[in-house]
Length: 352
Image 1 (cartoon, one colour):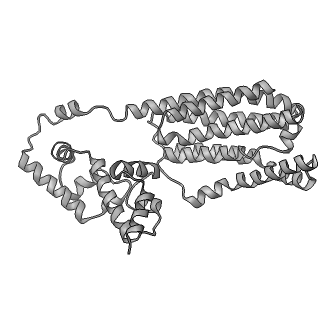
Image 2 (image 1 turned 180 degrees about the horizontal axis):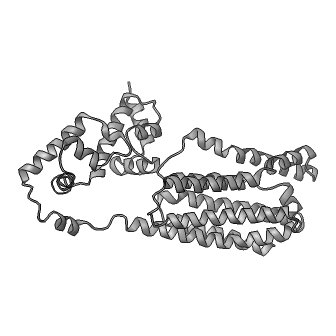
Image 3 (image 1 turned 90 degrees about the vertical axis):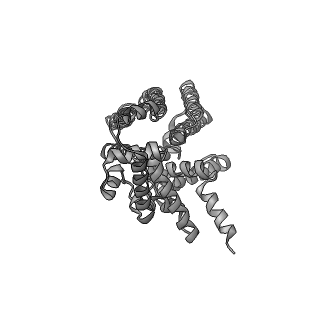
C-alpha cells in the first residue's frame, strides 16, 4: 500500500508541475486540485505508516483535504461558463474543509499527548463523514449540471472535461456501492487508489486540450481581413462617419454594460449594417469589436471606482459588463500595469 501512496503522490506532484508550467491563469484551479490530492495522500501515507500499516485510522480519522475537491471542481465549471463566485459563496463552500481541518489538528494533538483520540471527537468525525459520499458526488453532479446548462459545447475541451467529471462520478458511485454490498474495504480502497492514475491521465489530457484551444483561439486574421473587405465599396469618408456614429453612441449610452452585448446590438442601435460596422472597427479604428467594448467598460469601471473607492472591485466589474473576474483582472492589468485592487488602493491614497 505504501508504494501505491508514494506513486500517487509523485503522479499528483508531476501533474501539478505540468499544469503550473503552463502559466495559464485559468488553470490555477486544476493546479489546486492536484495539490489537494497530493496533500490528501501524504496525510494517508503518514497515518498508514504511523499505525504500522493499519488502515483503521484512515476511516476513523479521514483527511480534511478531500472536502476541497468538490468545491474546486464546481468552481472550475463556473469558470468555464464565465461566471465568478462571490467571496461569501467561496467561504461557504470551504467551511466544511475548515471544520474538519480543525478536527484533524485536535486529533493529532490528542494522539501525540494521550496516544489515543477522545471518543467524542471520533463521534464528531463519524457524524460528518456519514454524508461525505453524497457531499462529494453532489458536487461532481452539480459541476456536470452547470457545464451542460451554460457552457459552450463547441469548445474543444468541453467533451474532455465532461468525460473527466463523469469518470469521477462513476468511480465514486462504484466505491460506495461496493462498500454497501459488503466488499472488503481494504480491497475497495486498493482498487480505488489505482483509479487515480487514470484520473490524472484524463486531467493532463484535458489541460493539453485547453492549452491547444487557447493557442488557436486567436489565429492570424490579417490576410483573412484583407480578403474579406477587398471588394467593399466603403469610402474613407463613409468609414469615418460610421466610426463617429459608433463612438458617439457608445459615449452617450451604457448599453455595453450588458454582458451579452454584441455586434448585432450595436448595428441595430445605430442603424448600420453589421458587416460595415465590422469593417470600420477593423480597418478604420484598428481594433476588434470586443476590444472596443471592453475599453469602454474599463473606462466606466475606473470612473465608478473613482466616484466610490469603497465599492467591491469584483461586483463593479460585473456591473460594467465583464463576464469573468479572471478575464477582467487579466485585461485590467494588461492595460494599466496594476491589478484592480492595487489601483483601488492608489485611489484611496490619493484622497485628501
